[in-house]
Length: 291
Image (cartoon, rainbow, N blue to C red; front, side, top):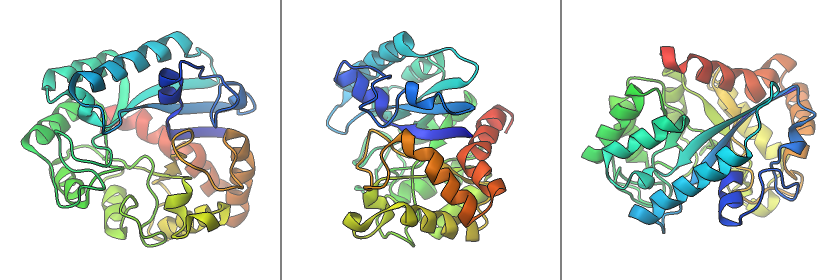
């Protein structure tokens, strides 16, 4: 099978722990991908809300060095950079040049708290700042996708009202299925759908089930089914959040992907499973520059 994952935090772990992107103790490793016909992985540089200004920028630069040293050049393996929390810009629009120079494919504008761009999912009521508007325009001008996972509801709507390219939510589930602010409302999902963006299913147990101790693969199927019923066949992807979140007991890491894929084939169809696990994400990023 082919697999395209929109979000993991393995690079952050490798950077702060001074470890390897090929450590099989992690959810994601290069060796675990060898059974895939093709594997695309977005490696997020997560910037915790506790880091601001130069500390945030330093972490970004350190993670880039780890990525450049350890990334693999292979016909089957494609490793891409992303940023989770634009606080690493330090409120300076010129720092977007660092994203361009390092071929960052998307930027998650906020994490949970408020930053220079606006409000995260735990800062509800705080929308997009003037600096945030400037960042969205500059990212789009340079073909870097805008990710609204972790956005406050107000930030979400502020962004889609000015965005000229399809926005994405790389690792967010359905709020109608699991009622947490980090998940998308039906209205938000439909907006991304109509903009021809993509949404990645998050495997974190706290976003799968209102009782995270009961979360399992069946919940993942429920979220997928809900989004598909909203017309999401060409929208839905995988954004597992591996190495950045606690998984249900029946999801161990990348080694579980093949069996999850088979469940999607059985529950929906092979055609839809292929779209969710590879085709939709690949189509979006292949065509993003032309949108």
